[in-house]
Length: 221
View 1: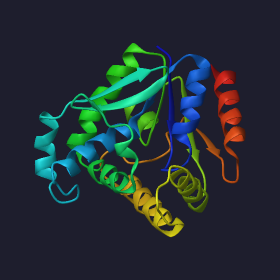
View 2: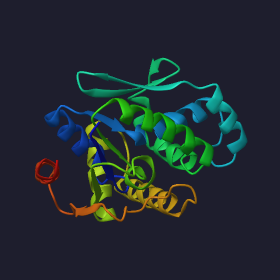
View 3: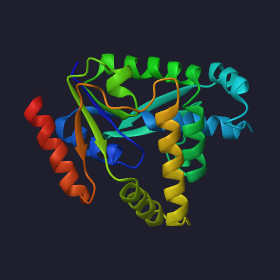
């Protein structure tokens, strides 16, 4: 199987770009961030504090079924059989995802699921630790980033377009919180793999970013 890893901080455009390029190549797209968001949602739904109730969250993992379906090339997240793809995209669940993502047992379970999918499909997988831990032998590795203010602006515009009532300042604070969490955790932190190509899209419009990544992948396949 051909595996492509795209890593980078929150809001760098990984999901949107990876989804578009995967469709063009006929690969499946695996959004690992959505998997952590689903764990975060499970914790919140169970009334657990993702920062404090770590033991209970670990126990919850054994009773929770997390799966991915692909319909028409679109990834959908399933929590205990229910489609929660829309529910996991709120700011509250973004924070919960970041908090449960520092728990080693959560990362280990997600790691097993992610590798199992990559073994079965040609895929583009994005996340924080794909090139360094999940798929260290990926054929192509990209570390996609942009200035935090630019990433926050993109996320703010995305949320506003969906009717979410948020402020840019809150989105920026959320982005900085997640950056710190992702980079400072002891288990599988966010970092660029030594053999990954760094691509910075600060100031780029979406179509320019998609073309840049698509051209790079096609050239190196």
